[in-house]
Amino acid sequence: MRNRSESEKEFSRLLIRWYESNKRSLPWRATRDPYKIWVSEVMLQQTTVQTVIPYYEKWIVLFPDLQAFSRAPLQKVLKTWQGLGYYQRAKNMHKAAKIITSRFEGNFPTDYEELISLPGFGPYTTAAVLSITSDQPYPAIDANVRRVLLRLKSLKKEADPNQDGELLRFLSPLLPQKKIGTFNQAMMELGALVCRPKNPRCLLCPVSPFCQAYQDGEQEIIPTPKKNVTKKIEAVLAIIEKNGRYLIQKRPSTGLMADLWEFPGGKKQTGESLEAALRREIREELGVDVERAERLTVVRHAYTQFKVTLYAYACRLTKFPLAEKKHRRWVSLKNLRRYPFPSGSAKIVEFLENR
Ligand code: SF4
Image 1 (cartoon, rainbow, N blue to C red):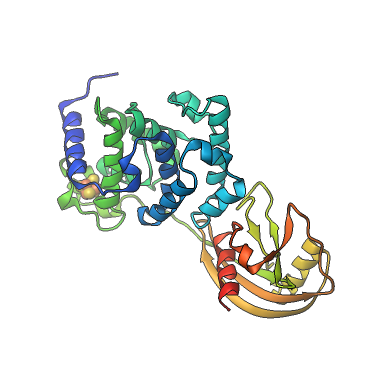
Image 2: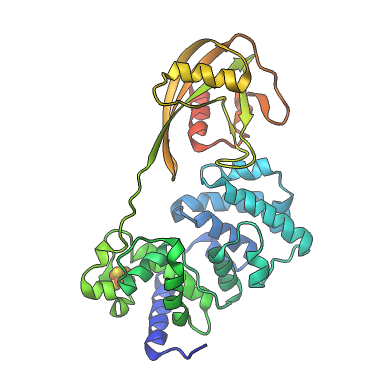
C-alpha cells in the first residue's frame, strides 16, 4: 500500500473532526455490536434515517440479539419489516442469522471473505459492518458517499453503483490508519447533512478545499439525474368475507415481495376493464366466478420500482374457495394485522379496520 499524501491525510483529519462535532445522535451509534450495526445498515439502504429509527428500535426490542433473531419465525420478521420495502433483504438477513448461529456458533464473522459469503452481504454492508465494529480497513460506498465522491472528483455522470470501482480507487487512499469506521460514517454523514442531493451546503463543508465540483461551481449538476421512467400499474383486489373472516393468500417464495400476504387479485391488462380484470383474476386464482362486485376503495402507493393503484372490490363469489393452511387462509379482521402485507395492501387492511 502506498503512503498517503499530506493532502489525503488532511482530508480525513478535517472530515473526522467535523463529524465528531456534528454527528447526529442515532440509536445504532451507541453500540459496536455487529448484529445491531448490521440491522441498522441494512435498514438504512435506500431509506431515510427518520424512517428507520422507529423500525430499528422496535426490531431491537423484538429481536434483541442474533440468537433471538435467528429463532424468530419468518412471518414475524417480515411483519416487523413491513413498510421498509425490499423484503428480500429481511429474508436474507434471516438466512444469514441462521448460518451465523449454526456454522459460526453464533459468533459474528470478522473475516471479510466469510462475511461477504453470507446471504445479503454485498461489498457495502460487509465493509460498513467490519469498519464500524472493528475498524477494519474497508471503504464503504453508500448512496450518500457515492454522491460526495462524484462531486469531489467532479464526475458528471449518474450515481451508478456498478461504477463504484473508479470511486473506490479514489476513496481508498483517503482512509486513515485508525478510526476507519468513524471515517466511513463521517463520509455518510457528510452526504446526509451537508453534501445533500439538492442545495449542498458547501459553505459549511469541511472538505470544500478538496472539492473539484465546488471549485468549478458545478456541485448542483452532479450527479446527473437518472432517466427514470416510473412504471405505473393498476391492479384489482377482491375482498372476500365469510363469517367475519377475509380470504388472503401468500405470494410465492421468490420474486417481488416474496412470502408476503395479499388479497386475491392481480394486474389489469391493457384494454381490459377493471371489472373484467377482477373476474379473470379470481377465476384464474381461485377457480370460482365473481357473482357480484362492489367498489370499496382505491389506494395508491409508490414503491421504488413502480407506482400502483389498487382497486379493492367487495366480492360475492359463486362459492367459497377452500383455505389451504400454508398459502390461503380465512383471517379475522383483528388478525389481519399479524400478517406481513405489501404497503399498498396494508392500506386496504387499514381501510377495512376503519370503515
Ligand atoms: Fe459536497 Fe459542496 Fe462539500 Fe463539494 S464542497 S463535497 S459539493 S458539500
